[in-house]
Image (cartoon, rainbow, N blue to C red; front, side, top):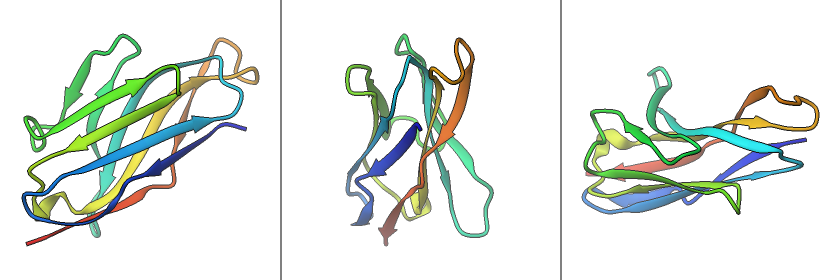
Length: 122
């Protein structure tokens, strides 16, 4: 059983910073792309950032220049450094990853974490 677990969320003032972590556990063959999503109340879940196995990154326009996604393949982990936070960044942030396991064989399956709350006060 593969699980993703987020941590690092909390309450910060506008202009502050937070670093989110996501760790994958279980028997893992390989992790392909990883990503962070977020969902605010009353809004659809949106893609925040992605990172490939080779380290290539992509960001939503709303977070470019403020957020940085990274990964540690040895730890099966990904991170999201969030700087210059704004109230509109308030949301539940979800870790996402495409993971190969003995059950999936060579095929990757998409996994989601449970989410961690980020609240930015004005």
